[in-house]
Length: 345
Ligand code: DAH
Image 1 (cartoon, helix red, strand yellow):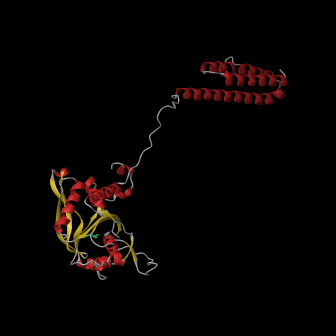
Image 2 (tube, helix red, strand yellow; image 1 turned 30 degrees about the horizontal axis):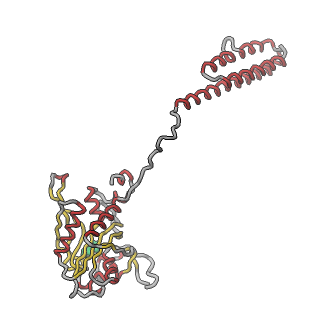
């Protein structure tokens, strides 16, 4: 057989094979096409191969080369056809799209447990007649210390115990710091309002403490202040007890331990107790913060007359009451931002 005739035959075979492989509509049609063209015994490619022997010697290499190309091309067309059939099989198996089904629900977040606590504390104290006051987180020494009767020599004013800013106040040139307590707001309110006063203030305070299960360099306090005629410590205790039992549940008690704060006289530490159901109902006490009767020096510093009015003040840790309420044993959890923790509240 002449080379030209051989090549022409190969050409038309390749074209016919490509066409029927591409046209095979299912697996059995594809198999039939495969046997027809690539069948090992009597496939059409096999018969063309047999004619290779009749090509004249010098033309043999060219004929063989072209034969191999045609064979590879037909095999590639077979693979493509197989993949095409597999794809349409998996598409058919997938459920048909139903546009009337409801979409996936987006996961809704919620307020952080501390924010929830703050809102609830505002609500409880609001029912007791306390309105919410606010003050800046960057303070001067007058509001954070001096007017609160904390003299310059007091250890609480040590620069190592506070976050002083490296810039001074623009107008005053005085040192500034991140407030270390919300008691600052007592001063701000009394400076701008005549008595009687009945406020709470909730917010962030800052101290360079090492973080552990009960400390964090930034935390929240709830400050309360009540100034009026004839206010006594019994009023303080009643308000704190009502507050604690509303927030933590009925079975809560309040205990005062003698203490010292420069801005109150007398001063107490406030403990709250509850029946620990995890420990067989044993009574447990936990320290919640400080309180006392507002020191006459403080009343005078804001222009009030201590002969006319008296008052009480308290400052409690919001993280502590929130942790107590929910049985959280490490306040650092509140700041890790791990949704597995947060979504429980
Ligand atoms: N400011 C105090 C602190 O941060 C807490 C405190 C104690 C606040 C007694 C008060 C108070 O209003 O009367 O440790």
